[in-house]
Image 1 (cartoon, rainbow, N blue to C red):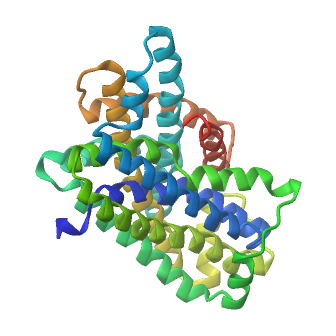
Image 2 (image 1 turned 180 degrees about the vertical axis):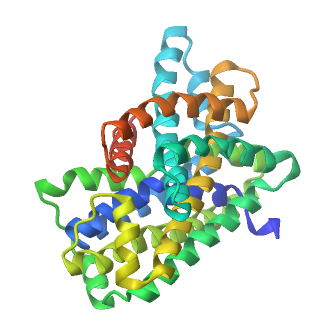
Length: 347
């Protein structure tokens, strides 16, 4: 079964993280399907860039980060280059952290502050999914299946109009009031840390094996196509469930609670399960990226759980502050993805 999964499996999870949930649910509930074209266009760009990053690892045997650092002779230049890389890891982890906390909050009615504290325990999940036992890809693949099935259930229950979905998929419009959410969708769909990670993974597995380029191409297209469809389904489900009924979703908890009277507990639980699975799976991916980047910068190895714990502790402070001042969970997710979109040109 492990043969079904490869580097693109891990990378694709980055395109189904809680930031996608926040961005697309906000967009779908506020603007209907006006920004659905952004999901499709950004997904196409992501496929191209992930293909290039992964191919770099196969042909050159080194990641984008390693190759760049090797060309920077000045210590100050290396430090200047490293700062945005660390910013990418921290901003990415904020969404994953929020996703796990939200999933626990929605499914088990745990207060969000407490759920955020419990979300730190995903470090233990990472240890159980040790790469040494070859189970990380399998676990991530199964979580992707859970996310996908959860949204198949939701779309079946909500049943949006197919003709509207098709029309909006090719209708490219963008006015000033939608630019912020469009940027958020872009940052959530073309993930900077995924572009960084792909070369690391292919270099480790297929270094110098040019015959693997075709497999890499095929896997990148297939898995990112699945991610694109799941991302689109997020916006489509929000459109069908909320926009068509005049409901503007201002918080993820509100989205969950609104689904119950409208479509029943099954749709709401499917939503909560998808959020939790998304948070856990994408968290595993972001910590692998963080480990690889830190190792490249330091020039020596470091344990994954140490990277996760440090980044998680850093993110706990702004997250608790944001929750304490009453900032909505959906806003935290959207803003974190805008930050990532601004970091994309650097990557």
